[in-house]
Length: 153
Image (cartoon, rainbow, N blue to C red; front, side, top):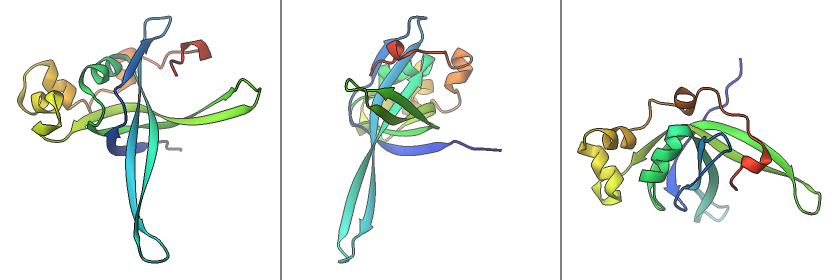
């Protein structure tokens, strides 16, 4: 048995960018920052920020585009995925991204319209703000096969 599970809580570094594959499948990309606090050898408190590339597919991508904004506090659940390619100089490059299967907007009413509507709204807004029960595979079937031309970043 093997497990590939990632859980992050952080803030969006930019608004999501949503594109569509040739087959019409929505894919949203954004970055999330997480902070780690530690003490260095001198006993001084230090903070390190990690940036994570997030990819969201299908209906969740559309919801992310509509409700998530730069600075939004989010809970992300998904899996880490490695992608390899060759750069312009022919060098092999590797990147790591989190393919989100669930996300939830966090924060109070001051976090923006999406979070406040989700706290007491009706219909789709409440579902979008508490979007943790539906994974991308639930909405779109198996993850689509994509080529490098389909990757929007």
